[in-house]
Length: 475
Image 1 (cartoon, rainbow, N blue to C red):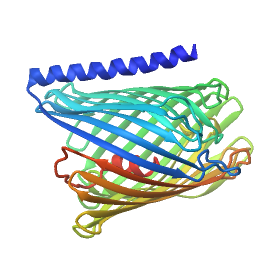
Image 2: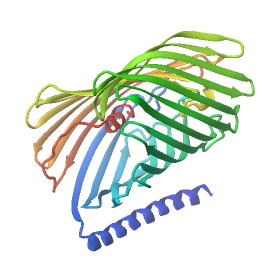
Image 3: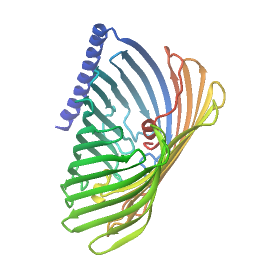
Image 4: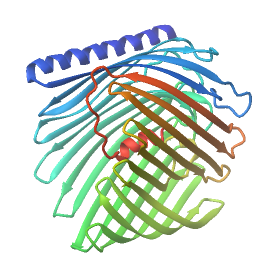
């Protein structure tokens, strides 16, 4: 059955790709779209000194990748889309991976079928043959739409799916998992600054093998913002989550917060906030009391700084923990000159249970990352990046902390308009105070040559927060 399933999966992926191609070519002829074809050829040599990411008995690996990229970009007044297909052949020196072809494909874009409707979509197939420790992969699909129901009311619908094979946060072992979520929500604007939102999310996570982190969740939530005067107002969130586990205790999580806000300028405001969380399980209740004071500084729609300082009390059936907690969220790109820019991102927070290690319970996180880009010459550029993430699990009997640090350097040389040569180095360090989880360090290096026969001049703009997070924190 396993072989039949794998063959079926590849067949379905091929049919999906061919269907997308046929639909798009029909759309091109019917709607007279502008079409841009971007082919590429690449060859790369990769090295890692710890292919299986273990603390002892480290295994190094070299592998060569030969790739062909085929990309079609479609642009029309009603939207845009990009269809990409990239087959790659990998040749492993030490045979920790299997030599063979991998077929990668993606289809992403946005549509405006009418002035009352917007549709965003993203489908990604990460080609692979088998689950092999040290080689992660992820398929993903997202479809979302916003529909204007009235002059001041919007309906939002979305679905998100991912299937991946990676190192699991809770155990440090490699596992295959699937996560699916569906969200529906309605937002109503009443007044220039007042709004009300109602949402419902259904989600579930499954693993290929029985796992305590498998769960099913139902989560209704609401948000309201109201301003008494142009300078004084409040906002509030409230939610309830019913989380059912297959191999762990079920949870009922009640969360609510309220902020009283004082606007100082158009971009700067201060607030007083109180947040309360109540988690109900069979073994007992958990309460979190968290008053705080802080400010929001919005520089642009995609950048700014939010900082809150408060006192957090965690109360379980048998113990209580309390102390200062700093809640922050920051993102900003600094342009030092025409040649250089520096992007910084940092955030902290907590939740009753994390998505990556749900069965470990209460989760506190801190993370920060940066990207420094500089054009050394007209044809040579350098990127320096790094991040640090700390995850704390504070449930009684667990009291665990995981730390991940990453540093990378990339040099890119463009000797010809249609050729790129890149040299990249990456260092990663992971440690946990959980005895059953292996710490590890890994050094990786890549040399890649890419040819773009039809490439047009590239315009480099500011990086968005979503793109930054995908590039930096997912290393």
